[in-house]
Image 1 (cartoon, rainbow, N blue to C red):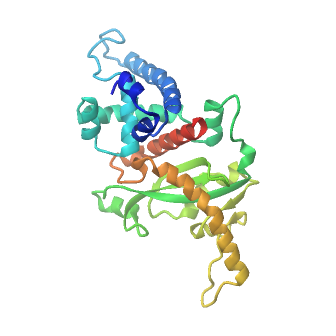
Image 2: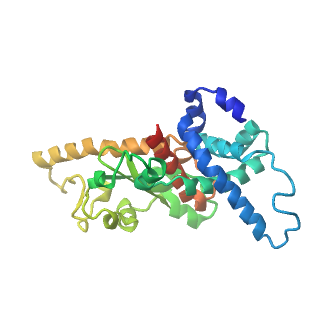
Image 3: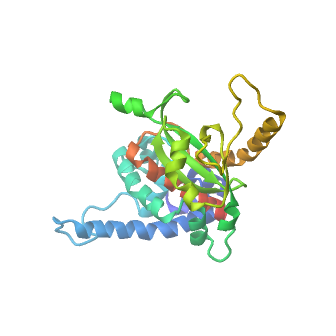
Length: 296
């Protein structure tokens, strides 16, 4: 797909293909292309066996502009590299190699932290400020992965809740469901409260009121509000049931934030790439979500 074809497409069509409306896509390309070109030049200069001048050698089939679009298409739709490469007239290997290079650039230029994203994309008039994070909503979601070949790895990633192998990510939003950060790439069976304790959320937001579901229950975190658990052999009081109802109404907003992340199918459907790349992919996707929310 070249620039001429993209310029003729409607904003709705562009969003359907690449997950961003034209303004956000234009800002992304302006930020990502110089970084991508600089990385390549530095990589060439570092090669000890380089005999050609920088920029010499075999020409790439795609322009950097097309490579970014191809990577966005893969992230948004999670189709195979054979399909994505075919759409751009290159092989599956070229599509895969390009993706691994470009997704790191997207991770670099698209901050996944809401405040960092505001400072980058909306310098003159931020639409969100840290003081709006006085109440945090916390939840997790799981992304299916292929069954590992080794028995030990199978045990480490098998989620009893989902009945398949997964990777888990923790999402923190404000009270309106605006994503503040993501902690991605944990093993599916890892307890939510363990992820929370290792995430540093309490340190970064010491004064914020925090709300989560039953999976985060722990007597070690009195500032973390979770639903009341029915006592063994007993019942909840009417007051406790009412409080649980109110918490459920509040927590729906973090679910809205997670839904926006899952709009990028690579984090919703079967993840087929290397497990070690998952955190980079997830951070890049959340960075793209932030960009879209701020500029659209």
